[in-house]
Length: 175
Image (cartoon, rainbow, N blue to C red; front, top):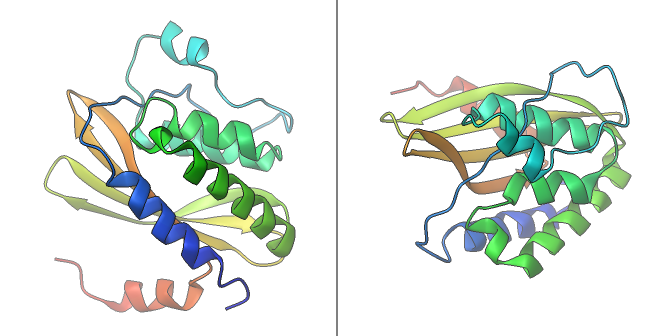
């Protein structure tokens, strides 16, 4: 693996996601998979609450990767974890931001993303696996969502460069 430090992100994200049982909410303004403006800022709380609707995992991921494409890593993470249990561990979030910036420096700028796998456990848990379309090599991103009170909320995030595993995962039969 080119950047073994990315496995540290997995451990940090797991610790973040399991630290507290307090309720939280995650709200984002919707984005587009093919943005027209490169310097579009990440959504702000006022943008998210004006519409008064709960956003889907698609909306959340679109906004996140749109900000990453615009090279706004801090804003992307601030919006992604806002009002979640993950945000309560600011030191770990800062570490994720730093490691993501380092990974983008190593793998190249992000021009977009693709959802390559979606798995559900019942009707309230979902994992979306994405690859970021970096100029040199892609990264694998796993977002874990929990639906409560009609809203999808991010509860865990894992990032690595485990591309070989993507092919192994696709060969396994789904239950």
